[in-house]
View (cartoon, rainbow, N blue to C red):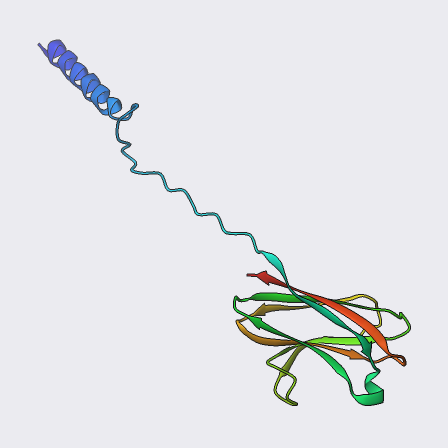
Length: 155
C-alpha cells in the first residue's frame, strides 16, 4: 500500500508541475508580471543660438568700446562662445555674465578669458533660465573685425 501511495503522490506532483509550467508557455501569463523597459536618457543637444560680429571694434583703451551679445535662455544648460578676430597681435577679452550688462553695473561676471590665443572659446556651464551677456573687449592696439558664435547645450 505504501508503494501505491508514494506513486500516487509522485503522479500528483508531476501533474501539478505540468499545469504550472503550462501557464508559462506561449499565450500564457508570466508569473513575474509585465517586463519593465527603462526610459533612455536623452542625449544633450548642442544648438547654435546666436552669431554676429562687428567690423570696427576699437581698442578699449581708446574709447571704452565693448561688444555685447544678449542671450535669453529658456532652457537650462551651458553656453559656449567662440570668438575670432583679424589680427593675432591684438588680444581680446571675452566673458560671460548673468543679466544684461548694457546698463552699467547690472550684471554679474561668471567667467572671463583674457588669454592672447586666437580664436577663443569660452564656456559657462550649468546655467538656469534667464538673461546672459557675452562681453567682447578689444585689448589690442588697433581696431578689429570680430565675429562670434554662441552655442547652447541642454543639460
